[in-house]
Each structure stands twice: as C-alpha cells, then as structure tokens.
Amino acid sequence: MKYYIWLLSFALLAGSLNSYAQIDDLSKAINESGRLRMLTQRLSKAYLLKNMDIQPSKAQLQFTTGIEKFNTNLKELTAFSEKTNRPAPLLETLNLIEQEWLAYQQALSGTLDKTTVDNLLASSDRTLLACEALVSQLEKAAEVQSAQWVNLSGRQRMLSQRIAKLYSAISYSDGNEIGLAHIEELNDAVTEFDLALDKLLNSPVNTHFVNHKLKKVATQWNFSKQGFKLLGKGNSTPLVIAMTTETMLKQMNDITELYEALAKKQKS
Image (cartoon, rainbow, N blue to C red; front, top):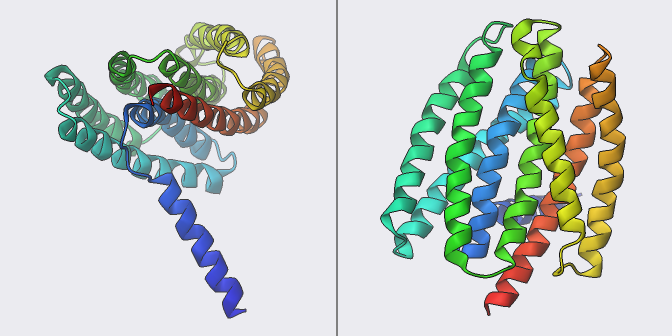
C-alpha cells in the first residue's frame, strides 16, 4: 500500500513537472504562448458550463487550473524574453497581455447572467488578441519553417475551445439576442478550424505519427459538426460539444508537441 502511494505521488509529481516545464527555446515559447491563447477561450467556456450546471466539478477544475497555468506561462514567457534579450516590442506585448488578463479575471469573477455574457466574451477576445500578437512575434523570431506548424496546430487548440465557448454562450443565452449575435462568430471559427485542419493534413513536414493523430482529430471533428447543425435548427447539445472539443484539444496538444520537436530538430 505504501509503495502504491509512493508510486502515485511520484507520477503526479512527474506530471506536474512536465506540465510546468521551463521555457528555454523559441519552439517551446511558441507552443506555450499558444497555450495562453487557448486558455483565454477555455476559461470562459469552463465558466459558462459551470453556471449551466454541466459537469460543474470538471468545469471548475478546468477553470482553476486554467488560471494557474495562465499565470505560470505568462511569468515564464516574460522571464524567457528578458533572459534572451528579446526586442522591446515583445516585452510590450507581454505587458499588454498582463493588462488584459487583469481585466479578464475581473470579468471571470463577476456574476454571470444573460446580460453579462457579451462582456465576458469580449474580455476573453481582447486577451486573445494580445496573446495572438505574442505568438506571431515569436514565430517570426524563430526563422524556421516548422515554427509555422507549431503556431497553426496550437491555434487549433484555441479554436476547439473558442467553438466550445461560443456554442456554450449561445446555449446559455437560450434565444437571447446577445447570444444569437455570436452565431456568426461560431460559424467563422468552425470554418477556420476546417481550413486549418486541411492545411495541417497536407503539411510537407508531417511524420506518419503526426498524420495518424491528425486523422483522429478529423474523425472527431466530423462528429462535432453534427451538433452545429442541430444548433441551427434551434436545438443545442452543449455537453456533447464540450466533450468532443475536449478530446480534440488533447489530440491537438499532442500534435503541437510533435511539431515543436520537429522545429527544434530543424533549428539544430
């Protein structure tokens, strides 16, 4: 029994160390700044699902760990930029992210109702735009072709959560005009995910394993799109969309890690 407890503790520690690995090169920085981008959408999604009483304990865990991870990544990216003497625009972008993040946290701590959903989503998107600028700056600094695939696959992580966020917001609003106003944004995110997935599937740098993982995402994605059709007919399945996009997020995270390794190899 003691051995089992020790083994479990070691596994948890190892997982924790892996999750909070130090950022020590540009490929890792692109990946982790892309994770910030994803978290801007994931936090709103989790907050909405919690308030809708859809897997509330799971949503709460995603919410608390998401805030912790955002804070950790922002600190590590700032430390990496300062240590590697990155140009002033990069540090300015990091400062902007911090400002938007503070405002976003206030929105996340407020009371949610059908009249405040729009403010929550707007704050998440302002933070998203700041994070997007950081990823683009880091990709440009990397100066290797594989960096674009780290960025693009990392963006798919964000889109999986953006889709879940917008779908949840529309479902939460239940016909409210503010919620329905986000249907076009949802359709845009779905289209963008489709186009990017096709581009990734045809990437010249893909290994056999990357292609295998991407095909699994494509299968899950095709299933998810059935839920969007139901939403257009006045029905919503936020639990199903939350579960399928979560699976896609995990798959795209693995794929981004694989592209990160390819970028490092190209750089060396």
